[in-house]
Length: 334
Image 1 (spheres, rainbow, N blue to C red):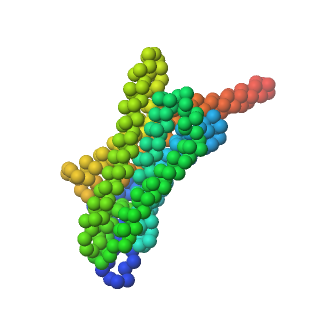
Image 2: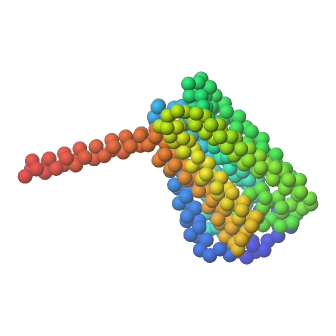
Image 3: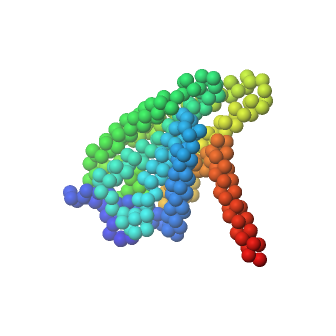
């Protein structure tokens, strides 16, 4: 990378952007970019295939899979915000980001990360109604109502993110313009501003607690209600069936919140990690859940698994028929 960019302080009046600097001391950083590119490809293909299966199968056109499709769209979006912009920055050394583009990326990065958390809460709500009120589920949780809930969630997250980002964009950046991160995150950017940024820090902390703890608390409460309700069922087989329907969602929750907890612990304890290695670990942990979500749903959800097996079985039958036809022609020629 051009050393002038690394040492650039950006104190001139004509400065209108930032320079993203990360992984400078990380050896073999191209392998990291290659791994992230592979994660992005699997994320994109997995979620698109999931969306296609749901769209092409009318039996999956129900409130649950509306929420599943919403999660798939969020997964594609958050990976698209993080990974593609890293290639020109860290492979081609094009690390300059304009002021407007930086804050646009900041908004969408945090917006879709927050949507991931709230989308899991919506899926928890769907499981709660399906298990605790199965007879009233078709009336309570219609497709139209699920769409309204999701629209409300998107609007809520928009309100939660627009203020911190717009506030950060109005700060005076008269000192360094070097962002020591892999992208335009809120924290690494606003600390570059001149003057007092304590309010921005408190606001960011409060917002993070809201978007993480509120959905997680709701999910925990729904599971407690589900467990109490299911344990009242006399049949062991019915209990197992009810818990099995929650297992997929529980895996999604764990794949999202465990990396978040790991990121928090590593960010505060820091152990023996260098800043670049810490950034690399946090970047990978942030991009893994969107890749794993469609895989988990495809393998652990009975409706999707049956449909996938039917599709694969249909292809296998065609292959066997073609092979038998070829063998028959060869025998006839002989």
